[in-house]
Image (cartoon, rainbow, N blue to C red; front, side, top):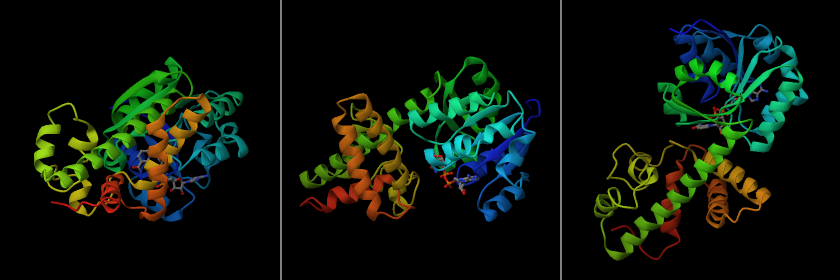
Length: 303
Ligand code: NAD
């Protein structure tokens, strides 16, 4: 076991709850806080100690981890509420939320101004990965901060990549998810094209999964039922990786592309497609359900 640390954990939702529980299981002391009392109570059931406020959660912590919905929540705590000033000088603040690179840099700066050390460390792997402790972390910040965080990241995940300085973790996250969003649309369009050509889903899968069309959207999260029994398509498109989260991540990628003058035609188009889909999809629908939208708008029907 790693040496025991005291961790202030803020945001005990779908991801933060199981991540905090894994830290407790590994022998760390976790002081948790969430605005939703029921979530705090659930976390207490896993061994997390309830803190009355975010400031209480960080006051005696060696390390603070935030796992919040979006940039405005992170900046609300880091900047408007001045949370870093409530911690002991030199405390390591790790933000695991997915937020804009620019927001992450503002958060780094706010914490540094209060004398804290920081890392942005968004994750990939979803709720299943958070529960199993198999997340991938992509981190931005200094070498020393990454080295200190690594043993904790190793408890919550199976891989941590140090991507560069402040904001680099978020940069890696938006780039990766732009690939994912675009490739899921491409795979879905290919399946609907196959339907119109009289080619079975299985035949396309058998070829593309071992040919140059191979990608995660096809071989792990296959958008049609059958070829990959564990994919969300086999359970009525229950997430998995929910549509609103994909829409959010593509929105972050699109904003970054626009701000940087990057000619990301497909990335911007994917952001529009998922933004429209998010308006009609339930919050629990997997992003691979986009195949149904492609099919609905096409003349062909499933074979
Ligand atoms: P969630 O909404 O389930 O959890 C966030 C929690 O933060 C909520 O419980 C909310 O009450 C709490 N919160 C918000 N403001 C707070 C404050 N000021 N003080 C204390 N608590 C506060 O979201 P999630 O699904 O756990 O996702 C968290 C982050 O991880 C998001 O940025 C998301 O984009 C990212 N992410 C999610 C997934 C996924 O599959 N769910 C996968 C990868 C990355």
